[in-house]
Length: 108
Image (cartoon, rainbow, N blue to C red; front, side, top):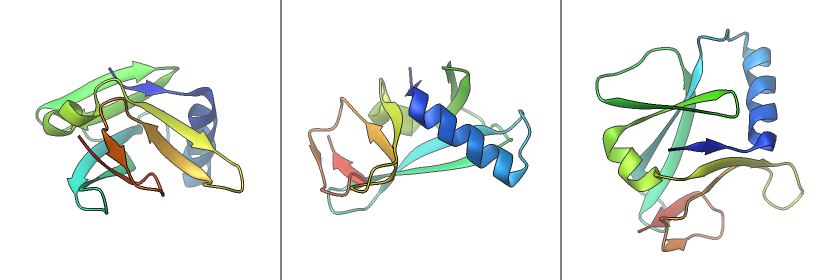
């Protein structure tokens, strides 16, 4: 399962409205090799499912990831912070054994 915090849901709704995306758009998240800790998080809005996509719904938001990425993201919560130190989306990943200071990459 993938989870969405209340703050992330609010920000996703704002962005969706600004971009003119309808309710058929969902959040796609995935993991790529790279970053200072070895793996990095990526996300975008999409409205097209791919073969072997894993689909989750939490807090009224649909989140989709590929099967390989799900192995790294299982039980992760997408969060959003608006503070001066680290404004933006963050992944609270219980599988990460190490993260970088910016929070954009991790290792398991």
